[in-house]
Amino acid sequence: MSPRGCRSALALLLALTVSCGESRTAREEPAPPRVVTAEDKAAFLAWLDAQPATSEFFSDEVVVAAESRMPVLFAFTSADRDFDLYPLAALSRGLVEHPSARDYATQHFADIADPALKLFWAVILFDQQVRAPQVVDYLKSALASSQRSSELAEMCGPEFEDLRRRVTAQ
Image (cartoon, rainbow, N blue to C red):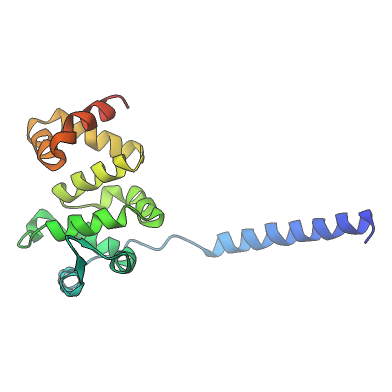
């Protein structure tokens, strides 16, 4: 193919790419936020109870399956707290290791309804080098509150002072 023919082919490919990208973007609108019901939460907890755990954490297969259920996980509130929060935290710990789940959590951080679970997510996101303003601001706010700071200290154990230092440096 002649250099002129190559340029024509590249121009056509570029035009197709741009026009396909434009039509694709025009069609793809963000889905409206899904309303999570009490039934969704009950089904999530039943699903989670049925999942095998390796030691105190969930297998990678369970964590991958849980990614599509993150809106339900984030919808739990302190009013739903007639169950142990630990399995949700253990599942969250596995989720944060997956980039797509970490991205979802960062984009939907404000949607985490339970204050203790939100604090946990803030810590694990921060530990994964996520320095999104909403995460850092939430941690700074928690450190400024004596009650929330105590919760953080209990959650982090001996790593609390290091976390405080790193958050304060942001």
